[in-house]
Image 1 (tube, helix red, strand yellow):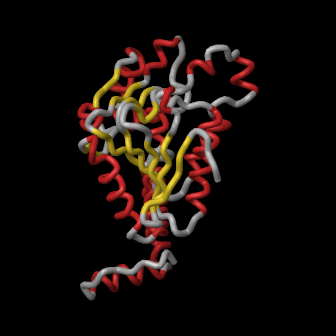
Image 2 (cartoon, helix red, strand yellow):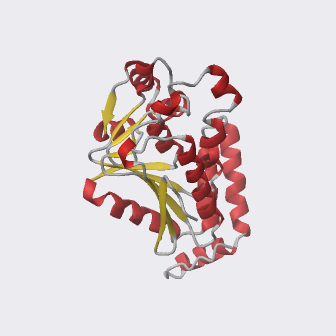
Length: 259
């Protein structure tokens, strides 16, 4: 389908790539863009040929934040009755296949929160992250005060949320927010390489791994380990487990069928 605020294409018929496309606004996130993003993610998630997705922006900005111009006149009644953010931004949480954020330039406010909603972040060396909402008289509203401490710890999350400062890619990697840093001109090549590697594995296993890791942030250790154990057990009922282990024993490449 045609989109106004994003562009969509596939790579190698296996990876769905979604590019945020509001260049004049530095990809500021508004309701219509987030609706389109959710639609594209759900379409790729439902496509059996797609094994992984990438969300990216421009070299200058992954997303510089939410659309403040649109938000400035909202009242409490507007945001509460219309379920602002929850209504349009939460679709990504229901996506079962892996989603990678390829971040260059600014990922601030809602942009940082969107990147954190992805399963992991690969950052260009010019990336900058932050939650500057405090400068506007508000706080993060799309999970920034919740996901950031889980990624970087309480002290650094407090620092960012209370001062509104930005951290560069090196600091973000050291803090645990970013999985790896690559040169700007290699960002999409490296991210696509990671996505294709994921696509080469059993979709059942990659989806189970994603679900199990996410469970670590939603439950206690004992419950999380038991959840992992049951998914581990369940994968022994799949043809892909038989194929993967037989291929290992016989020293040949595995040919997974996602079954």
